[in-house]
Structure formats: structure tokens, C-alpha cells
Length: 202
Ligand SMILES: Cc1cc2nc3c(=O)[nH]c(=O)nc-3n(C[C@H](O)[C@H](O)[C@H](O)COP(=O)(O)O)c2cc1C
Image 1 (tube, rainbow, N blue to C red):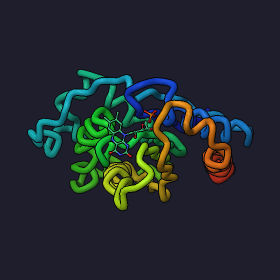
Image 2 (cartoon, rainbow, N blue to C red):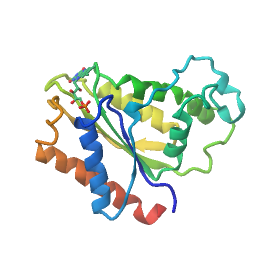
Image 3 (tube, rainbow, N blue to C red):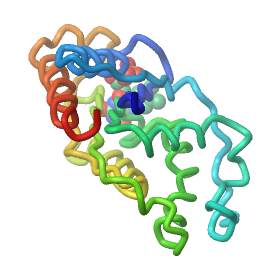
Image 4 (cartoon, rainbow, N blue to C red):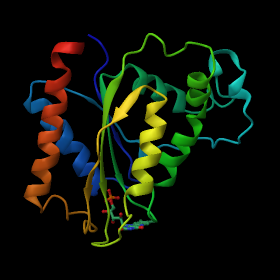
């Protein structure tokens, strides 16, 4: 069997709102007869990009830190998964630092896409999905930076981010689980995501 879809739970603590969103998306996939791999990215530390730009000229655009942590393994999962889902809290109007560090380390994929290596030539375009939860009920541009960063990061892996599911006023760990209409939106998104790829990939 080809690689399963991958769900990235990106909060720095477990059993909160974005973990719940990740579990609901998985439940939605399973309700359509599918399955997915769950990755708790928020538990992982990554070496940060130093901007050395060695990945511009390195063989396969390999990052100097590729063997130092699990980031490269996760990029491979993104590349080979039929679709991905990212659930994340908003921290100071943006993504939590571990996810942002992981995104910055993806600079090698930008270099691969811009260069002539053809590294991604054989990979088909795939879908990506996201759910962001934020504690504050207001804030005009609360989700904007997060969505843009994730979208352009994923683009270099040939994954197209659908408009994110954004929930405001979700703060305490149980806030999402006690909002059934919001839970239902995520559940349905997981179910639809699986149905959309079923014939094409599996
Ligand atoms: C460091 C930190 C920064 C935060 N910054 C924001 C923010 O800028 N805007 C907002 O609405 N909520 C903010 N929050 C609240 C979280 O987004 C909210 O509690 C969310 O539900 C946490 O999700 P989780 O349970 O998956 O970790 C912040 C929380 C933390 C811990």
C-alpha cells in the first residue's frame, strides 16, 4: 500500500484543541473507510535554518542538518502522502515556533523547486488542509500570517493548501470538544479529503 495521508498535530502541548482537531480529521477519514498517520510535530525539536544556503548547491539540495533530526523524514512523508492535514494553535498571530522552524528548514525544497534538479518532477500535485484555533474572539488578521506561511511552504512540495478552517474564541483545552458544530466541520473535511483521493491514489 502507498503511504497514508499524514496528520500533523502542531501544538506544543497534548490533548488541547488542535490535538482534538487532528483526532476529528482522522475520525472523518476513518468514517470514509480510510486511515492516516498521526505525527505530533509539536513534540519535536528541529535544528533551525541558519540561512547558510548550502542547500542551493548541495546534492539533492540536502540540508546540512538533514541527518541531525527528524525534519527530513517528515518532508519525505509530505512528498509521498496523498494529502496532509495540519492542525495548529495560533501563537502571537502566527504558527508555534516548532512548526515555524520546520517550515524554515524546508528552504531546501524552495531551492530544489527554483533550481534545475528536477527533484520534484515526477511527484503529482496533492491537496493539503489545515485547521487553526485561536483563543481570542477578535483580530482581523488573526490567521493570515499562519495560512500564508503554510501555503507557500507546502507549495514547494507540490501540495496545494485549501482555505484553512479557522476557529476563534477556542482557548481552554475543552473549548473545541464542546462546540459540536465546529467539530462537525472538521469531521466532514476529513471524510471529504479521503473521498477525493480514493480513486486517484489508492
Ligand atoms: C504562547 C501563546 C501565544 C498565543 N497567542 C495567541 C494569539 O496571538 N491570538 C489568539 O487568539 N490566541 C493566542 N493564544 C491562545 C491559543 O491560540 C489557544 O489557547 C489555542 O486554543 C491553543 O490550542 P492548543 O490547545 O491546541 O494548544 C496563544 C497561546 C499561547 C500559549
